[in-house]
Image (cartoon, rainbow, N blue to C red):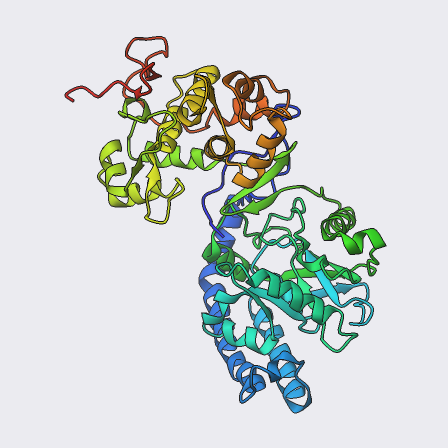
Length: 524
């Protein structure tokens, strides 16, 4: 998960044109002067000792984890471990894990409710997932099996603990991995109590505990009863939250270890029995369990989720980023002192021109390698590591800020619309439409492709005219507000002079011969 400094933005509510609160992806930690002094003193005296002792205990866990699986074949590991291995190693890991969290300052784990047996609820779902300290919920759950990334097997100690846990592993690089994970979850969940319970964090990533993210359906695919598990950190100062925007890993660890005492509340809700409809529809099942848990927590249940590296929210039939990557690109260019309005774009409408990172740097007149790599990474690359310069031209035009929305959407159409086999009219097909929405709104391409099919009139060509595209992006009561908000970035790149008006003879515009030009800097 990427980390950064706290942001001041909040999720856009397109129905009202204002920002909705709370934002589950941002955590700002405000310390008073007295709190800063306290944390400085305790951070120097208490935190180093706690962290050192915790790391010693973490490495002491390795022999117990290794002993449980030592000498067992892959076939044997497909069944739950029993006998002395289970008794000795399980109890050893459980005791040392409790000591580990105790040393980090979690002196109390308060448990409410009753954990169901594996026969009553083969699957446990825990929320809200707000921090890397959340594995503490494993302790009152008696170390259930977990689902983890296959890449974590290579992490020292953590990999050994995952093997000890007989965790279900998923690989992001193997398309068939998710199917195997689904089959394995179903096999264990329907084993009639043979396997221990499986624990899921259905949100899939961390938030700030102020709202529940959209639940992923993986925990609900088997269609078996689940037991919701609530995690709360009822401390006077929230030092544990590790959100997309907010304090990083080391700061969260240091501040939490500096607390004299941290408390965790773990509450087991009644087992949720799915209806026949929910058993057949994992998404419906997940949404209903999310609402039950949100009501028990007293916080909203949202449609917010992570897609790729950005948080998104559902708006109508479209998913849009809460903060488009375009804004991040603007910050990178602003830091480099680049004014997008004075870049010679030279992009040809309807024709892709693939450029390398070196050509990208030359075109934007960037010299710092780190800045070049950072800016180049915001554009989708093909198998050869090249990007379509039309994408760059549109992004720079949007960041320029010198165009009206009508002019910008016209430029986007001109860049990506294609000529028809017959006739002179140009149409915007699904690939160009999804590229525009991905660049300008941060919308995932599959969601944009689905919306494009709905916007195209039945029985007509599968493309949008300029009029249809602008009616959607400028005049639609829902989506028009998205364009007007997202195309006014909060951090505009610096400009050495006023950007020329679009009606000026020297301003960037789509010319009749199909080229897009921009005024060159003095001396070119």
